Image (cartoon, rainbow, N blue to C red; front, side, top):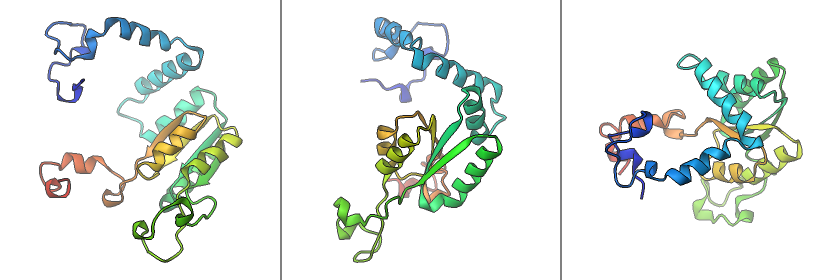
Length: 206
């Protein structure tokens, strides 16, 4: 079992190989060599090299939105998909308009696409926000399918719910990046709870 999150040695960030923890992935020399070879695959190599170049170019200077646009430009993508939450439709419109300003074709699909009642997907009344009233289900699989049909080259997720985002990633044929991670309690800043996990948020995380 790997426990990198609790490691204080971090030999992986240096050229040193001394004092590796017994369960360090760095012991897996053969497996790491095989994995390194995967970066040479045609569908990985340029993608990875470009993402690393963008990291260096805008390091600590560019917000994630600009980093995303610069990556798409460097990859010569033309058709960008946006899968967004109904609750962040204003933000999605701003992002879509900005992408078009940078000459991208933008296809956007809202989470409520289809307007299908939650109970038709098997969601019980007790798990609805307002039981016994119409509530459209979030439809991440539809978002992926519709973007796939439009042959988007790269997709951007904006505020999809936990779990719904996972289904979108699963069914999207194009690579996906998350621009906004939803956190309704913290203005979509999940790290706020992490930074305050031993303080203000301690009781709310137990």
